[in-house]
Image (cartoon, rainbow, N blue to C red; front, side):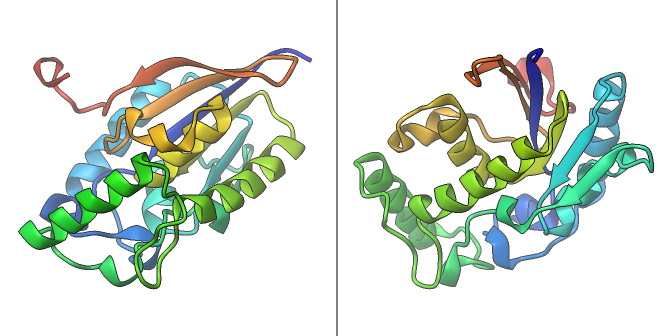
Length: 208
């Protein structure tokens, strides 16, 4: 078996991203005009890659972000297990001072190892790990040597720890931008390595 390439990409910008409003898995927002430009630029940058299998979450912003790759001759599948973490009662709220402080406190708890901690009505990182492992077991069982997976910011951070064997407490070392892409390589012994991080295709060099 030759090595497998796995491209994990975050969806394009939505109006909720732009306004600093928490989305999570309960907000099914489409990408906005900037998101569409990001998606077009991402396609131009990666259209030469011969993806043979494509997966995306059940939230519309992921499918829209990689729509141009979804041709009839390429297998593609929607997987709810790739959805963003559920932020529960926090979803749909603007990020004012109090909400931002609550969010930062929650991240601190996670980094200290309280990985079962969750917002009321939402999911913990441990909850998300369970369904992401289930999603990846399904994806890997289907074969393919060039995989494209489109999902969400927090879920991607958690997925990177799963695939690369990081301690879940350190999920925030992984960067988080609309249409950023992690290019991974799985060797014959199933070990997965991070080859390249591709920032948002519209991100200016001076901002990197």
